[in-house]
Image (cartoon, rainbow, N blue to C red; front, side, top):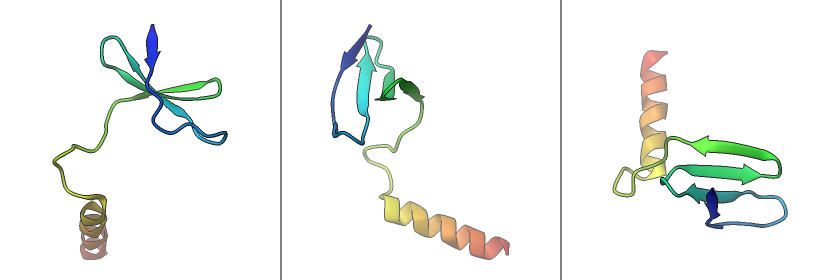
Length: 61
């Protein structure tokens, strides 16, 4: 089954769970969402990704 790996668990937030096969799930109440994509540990920081998106959108308009 799924092993709990609580990373942020307050009354208004969910919990990240990791199954034995490494599949991750975000669980909040009765809702369970399979996490299929995430940011790479050595990837670009979020602010850099947002800059790229804004520049791409500006160039397209």
